Image 1 (tube, helix red, strand yellow):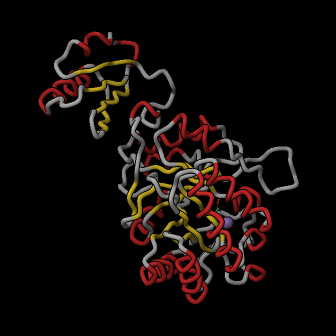
Image 2: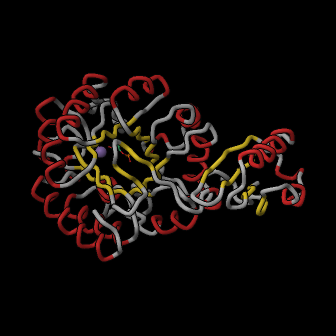
Length: 337
Ligand code: PEP
Ligand code: MN
């Protein structure tokens, strides 16, 4: 259930409502907006009468949240969620681009990647150190050594770092080096991992599973948020359909659909969405036009020799050109980039 406090409600009034919710068995999540404080009570939904709360001092309104996801629901934070990572605002007026190779391969590669993407205007660098590969014989990533390399390269260029966490045991080391922890498509419903990520205080980039509905994506976000970590960015990265012309089917419509359902920032990953270099730029442009808050683009200094996802990685000069185009599109839809 949702209790919306009146503008200017006092802390004592808010606390009285929280106490009542707790006494009734609800777990309380608090969202402090510019004008209103909203209290999300998660628990025995049936056992209350909204009027009991509306009669309390300082309460504006109270109503049940009928959707299965409560904290990810737009009504919990109608003003939207903005996440600040090393001074970069995600979910704010500017579209944020993070780019880089699929995998961290060696020191020179990641240093060069950081330089290329920073110069072109990206704010974050991506690169996997723990790689979820379809084949056990493919390159699996450099692990902690790779994380050290990407951290150093990012610091030299003033970028934030996004890297994937594949299992619970990696969370500690990931938190040491990465600013945003990515949950890959294959792990979107690894509920033990999601619960554990709810206990940390680092932003999570949650990718949509290859066969997941939008509601399932939001429920996975709810797993993280119900642990108290509200900094979740949802990422459309293509879903599996009957279509074989592209690696996945990039669901551009998921971007405005998500904006209608949730307050969380929305990211788009056209690289994995289409899997083919020549299609990445058109889909990146479409994603910005559709209202994405963030873009994730795979870029490699030498894609033909990349250890993973070379076929969908842009050449540096293609990335520079794309960034230029994206600035124009962002402007046309009232955003910066
Ligand atoms: C990646 O970002 O390199 C990756 C493996 O993504 P996904 O989980 O979307 O396949
Ligand atoms: Mn990849």
